[in-house]
Image (cartoon, rainbow, N blue to C red; front, top):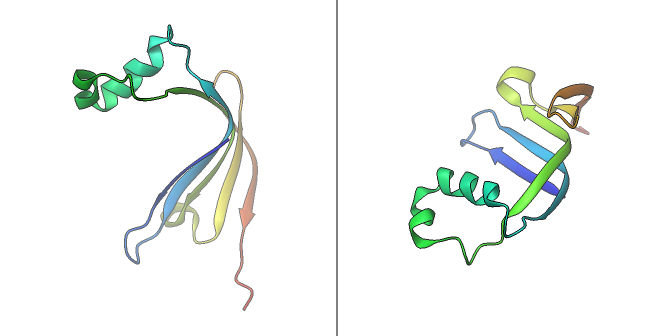
Length: 98
């Protein structure tokens, strides 16, 4: 499973993260997922979340890019252990073909 967040601000340096891991639908008895979602989006708590399918996601690896800090075309790859700690694996540098 892959989840991507990217921010582009019209000519400004980009930044974002890709998360790789596994996900499964949250059990109806597991209210933690619903509470996290409702805390972030309070309007949904009032309407109820019955129409939504909530998932539990456990990342195993991530790819981070932050052009302002790392420079263009640099991606940091890290693994995520069971406690959520990150360990650097490598840095990828992409260069233009021209």
